[in-house]
Length: 68
Image 1 (cartoon, rainbow, N blue to C red):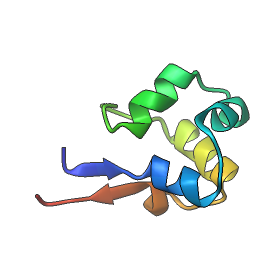
Image 2 (cartoon, rainbow, N blue to C red):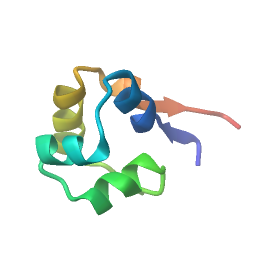
Image 3 (cartoon, rainbow, N blue to C red):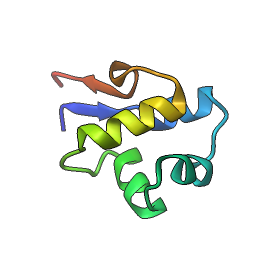
């Protein structure tokens, strides 16, 4: 998939666990895990906004386009 999700990178930079992020954004661990591994087919803007707020980052920090 040409869209790469760098959620794990931002979580590591912020020293935040998946459990902690799950609590802050009110998403299940399973849904966050799907997003983190890049298996998600879509993401709601409200979810992206919550994650950015919790990690104090921009959407571009989490999502990357690759032409490979």
